[in-house]
Amino acid sequence: MFISKKHLSRRTMLRGLGASVALPLLDAMIPASTAWAQTAANTQPRLGFIFFPHGAVMDSWLPSATGSNFDISPILSPVAHFKDKMTVVSGLRNRPAESSNPHGIVAGTWLRCVAPNDTSDPGKGVTADQIAARYIGQDTTFPSIEAGTPNGGPCAPGTSCSFGSSLSFSTPQQSLPIENDPRKLFFQLFGQGDTAQERNFIVNETGSILDSIMEDANSLHRKLGAQDQAMVSNYLDSVREVERRVQMMKEQDLSNVEIPEAPVGVPADFEVHLKIMFDLIALAYQINLTNVASFMMEKEVSVRTYNNIGVSEAFHPLSHHGDDPEKMARLALIQQYHTQVFAYFLDKLDAMPEANGSVLDNSIILYGSNMSNSNKHNNDPLPSAVFGHGAGAIRGGQHLAYPQDTPHANLLLTLLNRAGIPEESFGDSTGTFAEV
Image (cartoon, rainbow, N blue to C red; front, side, top):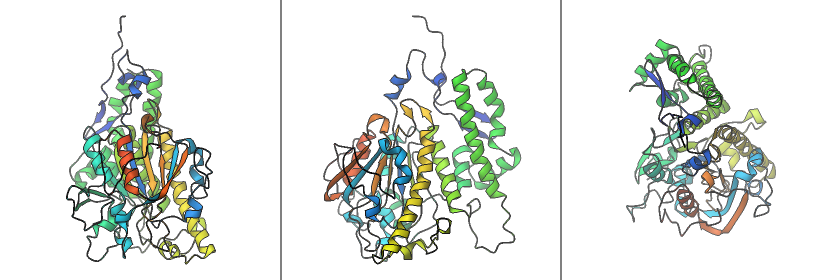
């Protein structure tokens, strides 16, 4: 058989003045004699860990049935259209996260499953996302991305404040800071320059990163087939939209508004902030800038109000509902709203085609909290749901209920293994879940 088709390198970049932009996986990047199906077999699952604070009203979170015929609970209703790609896991406990002052350590122990001051095993204490970064992040530009909306978090006496403001630990005591400024994250991912001043110079001189690489993009466009041309065009439109929104935030006139100082580029609108950060993570997944991301939707002890959904009470005080049915209903409404914005992220991933279906099909996204009943501050049973098929490694479409007090670490170890990471234990794990 004579094959004349040439293929592009998977690492092809569009380059311009002071900027470079990676590309999604195109048909032209696959050798002529290789089918998409064969490529899918080698797809590296992306891992994502999406954290929300103050637990969940468990009666509104847990499906009443188990197995594949589970019902969609109210808090999870915004992601009902992803039921076949959803795995709800219940019965899990994170014992190392239990504390008399929980808010200060809840975030930092969610992906760690080792108590903050536990040094009995110096080999443990690195978070699941950072273990993943060591195995599946080294061939990407960014081994992992740590993002979120909060700036800081609560502190617990006798414990590093990083346990209240970070999800990720690269060593048992070294946390990785969360980037909450979408402008900074955008230029980190798509721009060049070692400093903020250099990145700002690039955007101010060129007006747009995409403008600077369009000559190269047009040259590539002429070499691609119709399907690849459409994919590149749609991808660049997505980058343009994110860039436009970041630029608009930069140009906001707040001169007539008396507000405290905030990092440049952080929008005042919470939903806008969440969505643009999700956009950036989705693009980073799509073009193989990273395989691992963690995201903190909001911090513990948040006093944010949600007037946009009719809830005027501050989030944290409302979480101490005292078993008042009306307060619990309003709290569940906030939690449902968080899921609604999270659904936007899943929609983005599912709309990105690649081998084996979509980016979501090739992802393993854990959506959950490290607290259960916020009124009791307990960590048992945790609300946990996994989305995506992990390039065929995750079954999906089921509610798995495990015996009460099953370690949360078992789920994290299972997800690491499904992503091809050969860890045999993690935190206080006792095994893995064959059913996932």
